[in-house]
Image 1 (cartoon, rainbow, N blue to C red):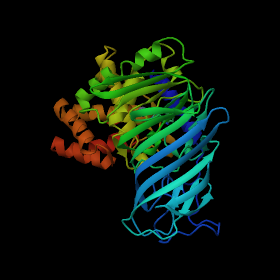
Image 2 (tube, rainbow, N blue to C red; image 1 turned 45 degrees about the vertical axis):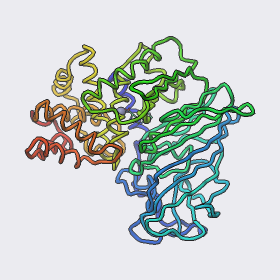
Image 3 (tube, protein in one colour; image 1 turned 180 degrees about the vertical axis):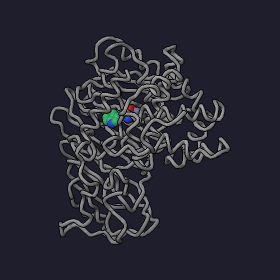
Image 4 (cartoon, rainbow, N blue to C red; image 1 turned 45 degrees about the horizontal axis):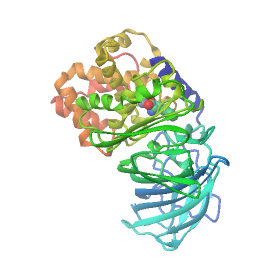
Length: 475
Ligand code: TRP
Ligand code: ZN
């Protein structure tokens, strides 16, 4: 199991290798139709993430996306309307949204037509009247085209994939801009309503609470509501022939879907343990943070890794090819607390997602009688694995986002912390982390401060050795 994840990590590294300087995007565009940013030091085309400076857009904060989409698998064409409610952080004569490979057909801001221009994957919207600081405004964008995944050296691949009988949209660190205009950075979390219309007989699964279907003229609209704030890369779409089951757990809807080409019962059996695994994790991490449960098994060889899409993780069929594997399920469900509810402020802190989810795997394996957490830690600690000791998980580099060190040494950091502070304090730290930053964003500094506060002593040297230095820390 671990090998599969490690190898997948290596693939991501290969995709991201050879990145140029981060500042590849010119701040001022040559296109005279597009306005220049009005203030120096503010980048309308990026949020300044030190790994991905052009991810997201400056100057405003989105509170909700209302997406109304229609997808025709026969042509691969997506047409949609996005109504985006946002609040400005400064006066703006124009603002950017991220949109990859799709064309805008109309745009308005608060009901008045706005002009738009494409600058690569940046959509520049100029409202008829400038926006002022603190103003809440609704941008409605009609758009369409034949979506394609992002094959970007800076971001790796992800996004909208056309499949045999439908489509799948997913990917980390970026995928959302391949199917809707978006402020594509986890720092800008928002509510979503997603309605997807597809030909009768196909399913259209997305995140959150199912809000019904409606059929008309051979097409069916599937509606989904995401009430807790969601980072854009956690939004997902799976269209096609699926075996959909709907149930309930703990008074909340449980929706699972398995692609109808997946043979046998192993995938369905593993997904069926979602409530049990979630409850196990909730014992340690505190209450499950969302109002829906589920999972989707997709069948397309280009999607070969599971992703923690909010409330409804995506698993490739290959995860369950050798039986009803629950370790990956535990990993993706742990992300619902760590990554989805408590989200990154900057991609550099990715160990806060992957180290924690890997630690949850170890806890679930111990619970299942498959070795103890301590044994896993000891084996890795003794192992002279330069891939782990040469990369600091707290700053793995853009190309090392999904490296072994982030997963394994990240999890080891948590176990080493547990040995330092004892079980009671350790789990108090995890639970307080999940509740204090629920539905929000946080940094590694926030975590180490919390750990020191609850441990009642400085841990600076400890965290420095585990997260930021190369070489094996002393125990
Ligand atoms: N976050 C994923 C995990 O659960 C790994 C991952 C990184 C991924 N990038 C991806 C999965 C792109 C699918 C697509 O470990
Ligand atoms: Zn993960």
